[in-house]
Each structure stands twice: as structure tokens, then as C-alpha cells.
Length: 208
View (tube, rainbow, N blue to C red):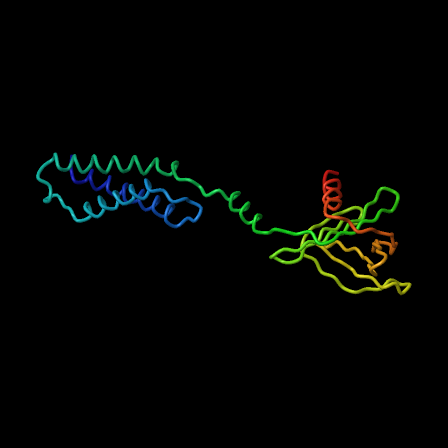
């Protein structure tokens, strides 16, 4: 055993320590692990000790062998510690984010053209804002929405609701309710939906 071998193993240990330390300490995707931190701390102590030593600080070859064995043990441990690191589960974070948005049903409108096309508008509210689901007979979308007053060519006034690029018109005068297919301006008699009815229509349309 000589000083050159110690210095070579010291360089290997230092590089490996830096790699693992950077991965663990500066990556938010790695979960906290006491074993990893203990190993990094032990390795740092040996690196600090070795950095201050020269050949004259050893009583003999046995002291060199002991320090070298310690470094080799740490090198092997660091080499395998990456596999033990636990990656934070992004899906759990996504689930937590999804759970934060709780939507309450407000109202819904339904109409059909008699040829298999269903028109649906569902309104929801949440702490994140107001949401709507629309099905224009062909496509569907659910997201926060915008509304604006509009008018057909014949002067019929209606409200245009837009969700994720899809738009439908509707009229609700308190007594009667209608849905307007904005692709051709056709007006369909509609009805209000209870929450249970809204859930049923949503499920049926999404199963398709």
C-alpha cells in the first residue's frame, strides 16, 4: 500500500460523493432518506480527513490500509446508493392537485335533434372558478367558460357559451328553455336537468 493508491481512491471517492450529493441534495424528485444522508455525512468526514493528510501522517502501512479499506467501502456504498433513492411519485402529486378542485353542480340543459344528436350544457362552480361541460352533438369539452350576449339573423337573442373552443347558444326566459346549434342556427326545445340526470347524460356521452 502506498500514497499514490490512496490518492487515486481518494479522487474516485470525491468524484462519486459529489455526483451522489448533487443528485440527492439538488433534485426535488428524490425523496428524503436518512440512510443516504448518513452515508454522505460519513463520506464527507473521510474526504475532509484525507484532504489534510500526507505520507508523514501515517504510522505505517497498516494505517494506510485501514484508511484505504474505509474509502473502498464508501465507494462501493455510494455506487449502489442511487438504486436505493426513492423517486417522488408524480401521480400522487397529480391526484392531490385533482382533489383540490371540487365542483358543485349548478344547472344543466339538454336538447336533442331527433336524429341521434344530443346537445348538453352543464354548469358547475368551485373554489377555482366556474366550469361548464358542453356537448355540441359531435364534440365535447369541460373547462372554465365564457358567455356573451348574441343575436341570430332573425333577431332572436341568446347567450353564447364557449368552453375549450366549443360554443353553444341557449335561451332561458324563466318559462321556456332552448339550445341553439350555432353551426346552422337551429333552435331546439330543451329542458333543465337534475344533478342525477346530468351525471347520467355525462356518463352515457363519455362511454360513447
